[in-house]
Image (cartoon, rainbow, N blue to C red; front, top):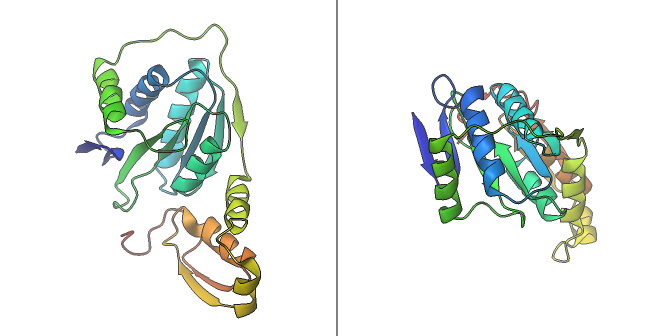
Length: 213
């Protein structure tokens, strides 16, 4: 089963969201966006590792430089794209769907998700699945292990955040991240806000201890 919508694409990893199908989406994404750098990230589902590798390898083959953020919340990839001169970004995630699912969310150069007409155009490229020759010069791979930290710092520096007032309250906060992509980001952000954080299921290993919804 596969679902295409303005949220991107989601499907069962056993049948539809496979490394090969992800390569087709990578080619379509490459054809649709302007030349330039791409940011990639994923949620904590175990299937995401191979899918991220497939998407990355295809973009590099086509000559694009790729920065891979690893397991990060979806908004972190959006933040990294918006704060750079990147041409776009992709997050490999099925959001709240069960572990058997995975998917792709597509990000424009301004850090927002693809508009409906852009999603439709991308899906048309996928359906045509035209072959693209290797680039004369392959792209380069760059890991970014600090994207969550960069994002959290930006959040606490927002003008609407009264950091001193929050820290003075010394909030105690329990977080159940269901071992998802927020397992690192949420405790880190709350720690920066001076909270006493009690983490539950924050290993970030994709072992959903209960429904991800």
